[in-house]
Amino acid sequence: MTGTATRRAGLAWMILSLACACQFMVILDASIINVALPSVRRDLGFTPTGLAWVVNGYLLTFAGLMLPGGRAADLFGPRRTLVAGLFVFSAASLAGGLATAPEVLVAARLVQGAGAAMMAPATLAVINTSFTEPGARAKAFGAWSAAGGVGGMVGALAGGAITTGLSWRWVLLINVPIGAVLIVAALLSLAATRTRRQSLDLTGAVTGTAGLAALVYGVMGSADHGWSSGPVVGPVVAGLLLLVVFAAVEARFATRPMMPLRLFRVRAVAVGNGMLLLFGGIAIAMWYFTSLFQQNVLGFSALQAGLGQTPAAVMFMVTARWAAPLLPRTGPRPPVLIGSALFVAGFGWLSLAHAGSGYVTGVLGPTLLVAAGIGLTFPTLMAVATADGPESDAGIIGGLAQTAGQVGGAIGLAVLATAAGARAASEGGGSSSPAALAAGYSLVFLVAAGLGLALAAVGLLLPRHRRG
Image 1: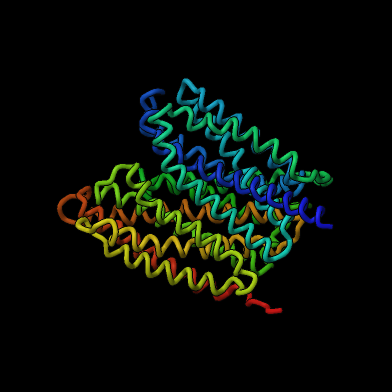
Image 2 (image 1 turned 45 degrees about the vertical axis):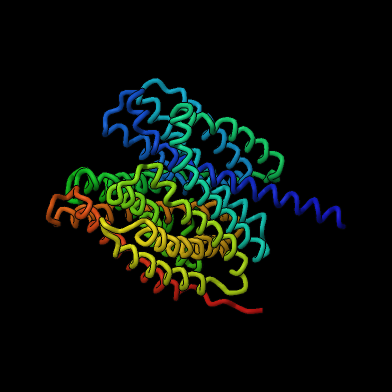
C-alpha cells in the first residue's frame, strides 16, 4: 500500500509539474518577445504597423481559439490535445526562429497562438480530472497560477538577456527542446482516454472563434484609430453580431453544442467567468501600466522596469501558493473580498504617484499590495469557474475561463489606454511630458480601484461556503 501511495504521489507530482510547465511556456511567450521587437524590426525589415502583429497575432489566435481548444480536450482527451498543442507550438516556434521575412514570422506567431489555445485549456482539464479532492485541487490551482506568474516575470527579464547575449531568434527557438521534453512527459504521465463519438460543432466553432477574434482585433485597434473609427467599429460590431449568432446556434440549432449554454446555469461557472472578465482589466492595470509608469515617468529602462516589477511578481507567487490550500476551508468569498480590498488600497495608493515620486513609496509599496490581491483572487476565481461543471465538459469550461480573462484583458487595455491618453492630452505642458503621462496613469489606477470594488460586489454572488 505504501509503495502504491508513493507511486500515485509521484505521478500526481509529475502531472502537476507538466501542467505548470505548459502554463509557464504559454504565458512566457506572450511577453518574452516584447523586449526583442527592436532587434526583430532591424533584422527582418518590419514596418511599425507590421511589427505590432508579432505580438498581436499570437494574442489574437490564442484568445479566439481557446473555446474550440477546450472542446477538443473534451472530445479527444486532454492528453491528445495537450500533445498536439505542444507539437504545433514547438513547430511554429522553430519556423518563427528561422524566419527570414516578416510574413513568415507573423504567420508563425499566429500558429503559435493556435498551439497555445490547445495547451491552455488542456492543462486546466488535466488539473480538474487529476485532482478531484478539494484540498489537492486548490493546491494544484495555486501552483498553476504561480507558474503563470513566473512565466510573465521571466518573460520580461529573459527576453532582454537572450536578445543581448544570443539573438532574438533564440527567444523562439528555446521553445523547441522544451516542447520536446514536455511532449515526452505528457505521453508518460497522462492516461490515454477514449475519443468520444461526437463530431465537433463546426458552426459553433467558426462563429465563436470568428466573433471573439473580430472583437479582440477591433478592440486592439482602438489605441491607433480611436473608438469611433471604421477599423474599430466595424470589427467590434461584426464580432458582437457573430457572438449573438454563436449563442443562438448553441442554444437552438446545434445537436451537440461546442459550448453548452447549460453550463451558465451553474452559479459558480457564471459568476466566476464574469469576475474573470473584470479581473482581466485589473491584471492589465497592474503589470502593463505600472511598467509604463516606471519607464515613461520615472525614466527606467525596459530591463529596470522588469526588475522593478520582480518583487511584486514574487509576492504574487508566494501569496498564490500560500492562499490556495486555505480555499477548501474558507470558501471563495473571503479571499475574493480581501483581495478586492487590497486592489482598492494598492491602486488608490498608485494613483497618488507623480513625476517626483520615488520607486519605493510610489511603486514598490502599492504594487506589493496589488500583487498580494492577485495572488488571493486569481487562483480562487479559476478554481470557482472550473470546479463545479461536469467532468465531461472540463476542457470547454477551462477554455471559457481563460477566454474570459483574455477578453477582459484586451478590453481593459484598450479602455484604460484610451482614458490615459485623453487625460494626458488634457494636461498642460504636452501630452508626452512625465507630468502629463503621470496624470494619465493616475486615472488608470483610479479606474482599476473601481474595478476592485466591482469585483467585490460581484463576489457577494459567489456560493456560500458549506462547512463539513
